[in-house]
Image (cartoon, rainbow, N blue to C red; front, side):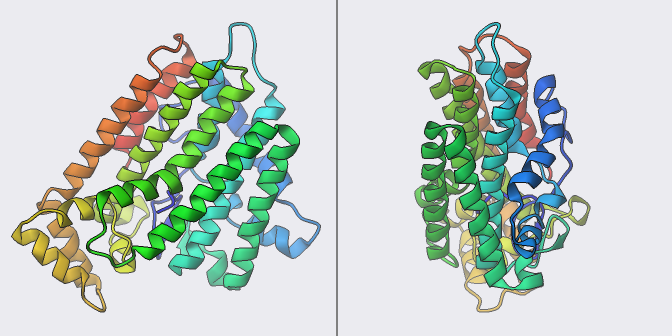
Amino acid sequence: MTEGDGHTGSRRGAGSARHESGWLTYGPARTLLDSLDGTLAEFARSDDVRLSEVAEHLLRRGGKRVRPALLFTAAGAASPAGSAPADDDLLTAAAAIELLHVAALYHDDVMDRAEMRRGVSTVNALRGDAEALTAGTFLFARAIRMLVELDGWLADWASQSALALALGQLQEAENTYNVGHRLDSYMQIAARKTAALFELSCRAGAHLAGASQETAEALGLYGRVLGLAFQAVDDTLDITADGDSGKRPGIDLREGVYGLPVLLVLQLKTAEADRLRRILQRDDLDEAGQAEARDLVIAAGGVTGAVKVAHGYGQEAVSRIAALAASDAKESLIRLPQYVVLRRH
């Protein structure tokens, strides 16, 4: 359930260019994002040419870069008047967190047997599972090393987030094809696999800005609930996506990873829920079965319900930062949840 950037052939939404939306109006964050690719390439490089090539495979495809944007913007919203953290520190922290995210995607693709992500073949499809897993582990290690050298507090938080990712991945694997998967378990997975890095990004930005504990806590909670909103919407895309969005619908259903819209329907005591359960329990869910399942989820209100949940989390996110001083950075953070809820890829 790792929120993705263009995962086709298995899971997660389509990739997109940075600055694709109008939410990020905070100028310094946009400037730093323009410098991020160079920092990512530098820290993903290895003395082993082959490992460098594999590690940089997905990074070269870009992506939404939501986590780095969050870190830069949180730092701006948290900075005391007249002060700002060093750009190099912000870039290092943001690159490290993005590497953690990409590492998780590499491992996710192996477990999902994914063939495409961000419009290109996955590393596991091109080179095999062993190289994909090695690249993911390398990126995890490099990210933690970067943070250890930058700030021990950030390294500690990042290691906790990496542990959460691993636990979430295991918990998700344990619940594949489980039509009795509980909503509370789903939310725990979403918190571990998506919200953890969103929260880390916001806390890291606040910490580097020298924010008070109260401000850092507010921004961390903002990131956490924003991540939950992001995952809820991501789950709807497996049901509603079309070819124009760059994502093939129904992949999660086929792989037995039931997102929020599906689980909301399965918990109902209705004929539609019973029919959906029977479809999902087929040994081989073909495209016709996927289409029928998606239609049932939509008709039974699963997508509408998931979007409502995401909207509620978005409102909660904004409320978490209500006490922050007005600024261009805060305004971007206020605008972001609306983008999250309305996005189509």
